[in-house]
Image (cartoon, rainbow, N blue to C red; front, side, top):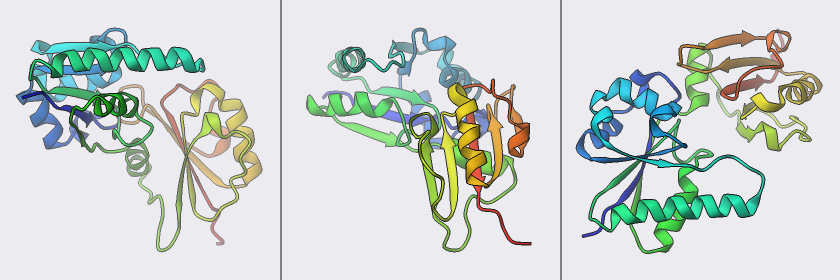
Length: 230
């Protein structure tokens, strides 16, 4: 019997937001994969080990897949990670791949998953609480109501977009180009809120575009809502 690769969401940052299923799978399996040069230094590991102290005694697979715009380098890194995972699956062991938030939302897991499945191995996904749902809760405000649509965008790749559709926009991955993102938001005329490092020790909440610093960190999530008539 060959092992199964599971993508397991650990939520946005607060270890108390991890699901019971995520905790159980980490406890029950001995091989835990984490995207990063050293597993113990990654955000996903640091979140999970608070909820599952046994994680510190597990066999860790560090899958180094640095972010780059070089498509060939990305392909090599994803292929190397998949080969590392497959070498464990061949031993009949399951691999629990930890990922921030939910594995189906802009997750590195998907690139490894596709390659592993192509080679004939089984995979599974365990949902985690998404960063934008956690941010809405932290702000104590609904993301959408009644028939409003929700638009989730990777801001760094959509700087030329006009936020002109009805409903609420969620802008993820905003930190690196916050100056340009703020210009985009100013043109939109929307009510803007942001949570930086949601659920983590360095969490900051900003209400209003003017409060948002241009040097905000990578884990900065923006919610831009239509202005309501008073």
